[in-house]
Length: 209
Image (cartoon, rainbow, N blue to C red; front, side, top):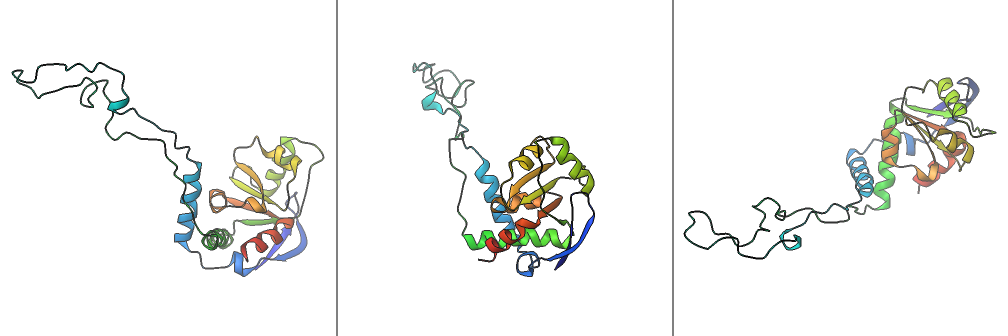
């Protein structure tokens, strides 16, 4: 798949790069994508939720009324879940929501996500760039030039670039990562994926193993 390379001003450089069909042109596997996104979201959960059950409630252990003769059901503890202020029945407990997926499935999911974006023509290849200073305005100018100022975008760098990353950090609609940080969720969560030339080799190497 041939894709034109543009510069940060949105103009074509006259060059084209060949995106590997083994990474950007496969038949998407929806179930693999579902599992990988599910794992990503599960791993974000802290799992620190907790409700007190009747054994953890502080209260009197006195029998609150006599066993018989009241005309109502027998009751022994004010901490019973049926009373206000009592414990909660089967309440949430701290737990770990994460689960494992094998590497081949995760690679298939990322390739499927990239293929979906490529099929939707939502992938842009930009020549490598950097900023001399850390300014949000610099990154905003790039977004406007690429027509992405009102769209959620994901920029994938070949290697870490502090100036570019920090210049984008205040913008909610844009995220900057390196090729090694690429995930199925981040690909699909963005309206447009912007790949810098330097990231292509790393992406294809990581996903072709």
